[in-house]
Image 1 (cartoon, helix red, strand yellow):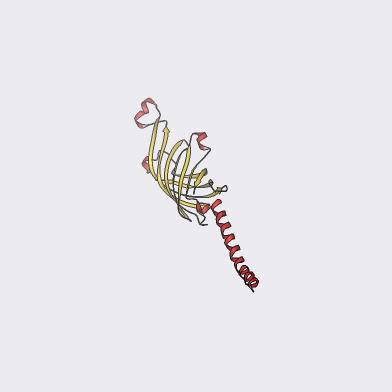
Image 2: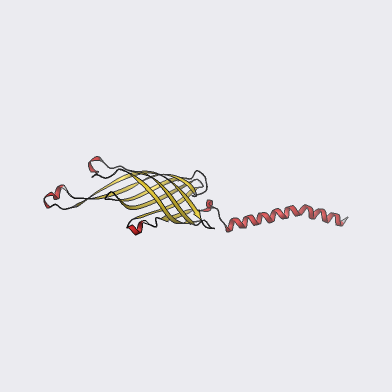
Length: 192
């Protein structure tokens, strides 16, 4: 009778023991290999632009699994105009994987445009060049895809593009393009 009772107890406790062991293994795997949802912040830059004398970088912080806030800055040249930008962006990740995968953003910011002109009204007689500068608010929309790589998902690679509008008045446009395409290729570090 004791043997039957011991076998019955062992048979009843074996599935519970196996389930507990499986749960411990799953928890330890999650701790050792965090999912992209565990990423809280990403700091990234474009690795190619500094070679050309320009810069593009971004700091992004997760608000929810599907939403993040980013601050981006850039300095570049397009059509002989130098653009310096600072933007605040709200980004949606429809797949709800915490800053991984497809991201859609809208941003507000400020831009400074500098153009070197051959003729200026106050220097016509001397035929000197002068710099024409205009500051304006900006609005942008963009889409990108972000990969979080490595066993800890701590390397972020982002590829995307969009469009930016500079709200420059007609009187001060100096031939500056008001609508420009934007491109993004950044490599960064993700913090958990």
